[in-house]
Amino acid sequence: MYNNRLLTSILNYIIMCVYVRVCAYIVIGGIDMQNFTKAAKALSDETRLRILNILLVRECCVCEVMQALDISQTRASRNLSILYEAGFLKQRKEGLWVLYAIDTKGLTKKDNKYLDFIVQAVSNALEDNKTAKADIARLKKASKLNPACA
Image: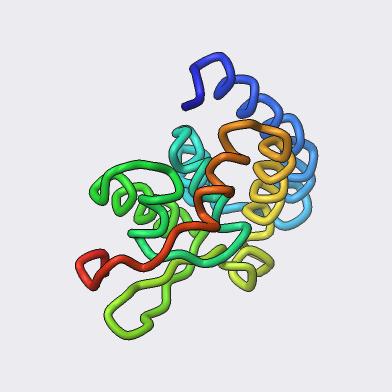
């Protein structure tokens, strides 16, 4: 797990990487501050940073997120929902499963361009992180367990 000091340094890196781009975006085209605040709050939790990191590798259902991060179904679902509501993720149904993925089309829309900058910064910040690498290694072994994770 991340400790508070590591989480703080990761968040500071993300803020530093995104700051100039977001400021330029605000000046050039305006930004919905309510949505921006929701996105920033969504990233204030280590579990959500870890979820974004594994979803950069591939789309996952709740049970795969559970296995990759070694967390409960409730925790995985709650955090996926927060990231979805903040605009980072998209959902699609496949049979009984709901699959989550980074919403690459949504992130590049004019109104949400800052989200793309944030996701890139998260990716760069976690690139050499031991916990993030362990999550990805577990993701490779993860599978859809049963329809209960739908």
